Every structure is written in C-alpha cells, then in structure tokens.
Image (cartoon, rainbow, N blue to C red; front, side, top):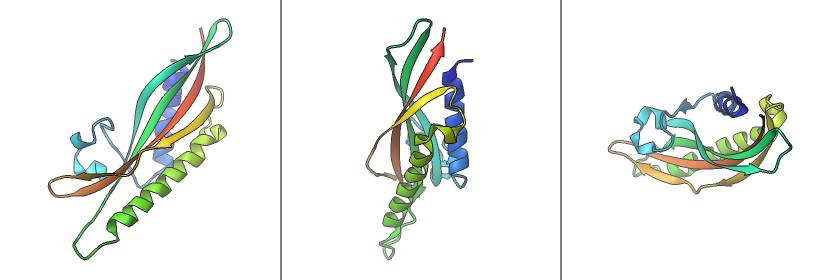
Length: 150
C-alpha cells in the first residue's frame, strides 16, 4: 500500500472525528446525485490534481490537491430570514475546524507518510435547491505533500 492510501484514509477518518454530527456524502463529486439525507449535514472528500516535485534518488514527492465538501440544510420559511445566515456561519465554523486540524500534520498522526499540508482557498457558499429541501455547501481546498520510496 502506498502513502497515498494511508493519507486518503486518514483524511476521511479525520473528517468523521472532527465533524461527528455530519454524514459522509457518497458522491462528493456530484452533490445533486446524493439523497437529501446525506446533504442535511454532510461532508465528502474529493481528490483533485496531483503534481510531482523534485526528489532524491529512489524517491518521489508529490502534492495532491484535495477538497472537503461541507453541506448543511437551510430550513427556510418566509418568516425565517436568518436561516441561510445561520447555515452559512455554521459552514464557516466547520471549515475552521478542518483547517486548524489539517494544517497541524502532527494532529493527523501520519507524519511519517505526510510531509506537510498547505491550506488552499475555499469556494464561495453555494445554494442547492431540490424539490423539497434547500442546502448550502462550501468546498475547502488544501494540498497534501507525500514522499514515496521506490
């Protein structure tokens, strides 16, 4: 097994531990294809691109761009004008929890497999409307740098 598997599995486990009230989204690549119960308060991990870096003989280093998708339901009525604001602030707090933990590689407990994590940008808050429910989501990006021995 390569370090990429160890890092990926650890990142998923960290999301589950750091966001215990959230449900893992089965398909974070296409939120519309998930049932509403996964989007009420959900998270998902996406792998984006990977870039190789300079390395020593018999080793190779690469940085993999990941995104964590965070979702929350917006319970909206005509009289409840604060619902979307509350859901948006809650998403921002979720993002803060992830960034704080992911940036400190020692917190993840895989320092032998992971050289460093660089925090990236986040998307803007997106509104997702379905037939019966409304949700907001945000995508939090970061790059994990891994070294593999050949």
